[in-house]
Length: 339
Ligand code: DAH
Image (cartoon, rainbow, N blue to C red; front, side, top):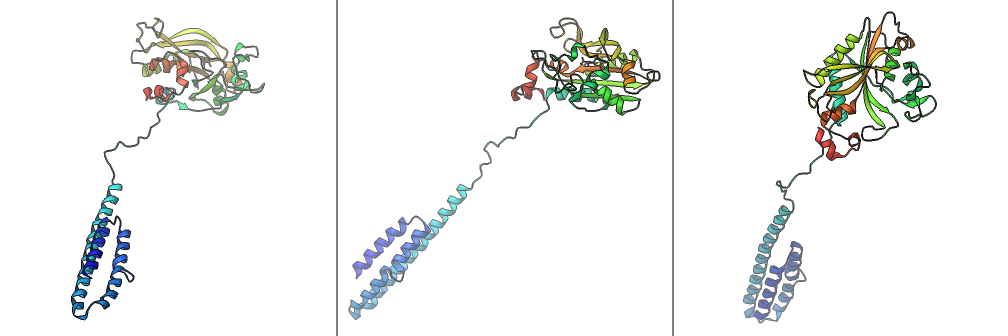
C-alpha cells in the first residue's frame, strides 16, 4: 500500500510539473483525483488492508491527495502567470518603431506659376475665368480675325476634331467668349491648357497660357505698357522692366511682343536669356476693332488691350529647368523639388 501511494505520488509530481497548459493540468487532475482516477482505485484497495492498519493507510491516501491538490494549484498559478505574461508580450506596442509615412502631394510647378500670376492680376482688380479646351474654329480663329488661309490653321499645327471643332491652340478664344458674355468694363485673365502638334525640348503638344483682356473707354498702348510693367515688377523684382517690340497678330492692332527683364541675371545677360538681358514671355496689343465688333462691342465707344503669355517659359526660367519635357513627365523625384 505504502509503495503504491509513493509510486502514484511520484508520477503525479512529474506529470504536474510537465503539464504545459491549464488544459493538460486539468487532465492530470482528473487522472488522479477524478471519479475514475487513480485514488478511487486505491480507496477500493483499502478494503484488503487489515482493519487495524486501515486508519493509517486512509490517512496516507488523504495526505497524498492533499499533496497532489496543492501541487496542482501551485502549478495552476504558475501556468496562469505564464499565459498572462505571454499575452502581454504578444500585445506589446513598440512605440520606438518608425511610423508609416503618408506621402503628401504638392502643387505642380506650372500650377504654382499660374497661382502666382493669378494673384498678381487679382491684386490689380482682374477676375480669373476658365473656359473649354475643346473649342470651335469660330472662337479660336475666325472671330479673332484669323483668316482661313492663316498658317496657324494648318493641320500641322492644330489638332482638329472635326472641320469646325478643334483643341484650342491659344487661350485667346476666351477673349471672344468673355466679350460675348459680358458688357464692358471688362478686366479678366484666363489661365488654361492649349494644344499644338509640336514636340521637342522647347515645345510640348499641351502647354499653358494665360490670356488677359481689358475692355473699357480710352484703353491705349500706354495702359498696356503700364499694366505689364507693374506685372513684371511683381513677378520678377521691383527693378524689372518691360520692353515692346513691334509684332503682328491678326486680332491686335498694333501688336507687340513684350520682353521682361531676365529673372536669372536681372538684365546683365546670362545663358538663360542668351546674353540679351530679356525674356520673351508675351504677345500683346490693342484689340483689333474688328474683333470688338465681331462680339457686338462698339469700337467707337470702347477699346481693349489683350495679352497672352506662355506659362512653361516662365516656369523654366523660374526653376532653372532647361528641358520642357521634364515638366510633364510627372516624375515625383523631379516634382518634389518645386514645392
Ligand atoms: N495667342 C497668341 C499666341 O498664342 C498670344 C497673344 C498675342 C495673345 C497677342 C494676345 C495678344 O492676347 O494680344 O501666340
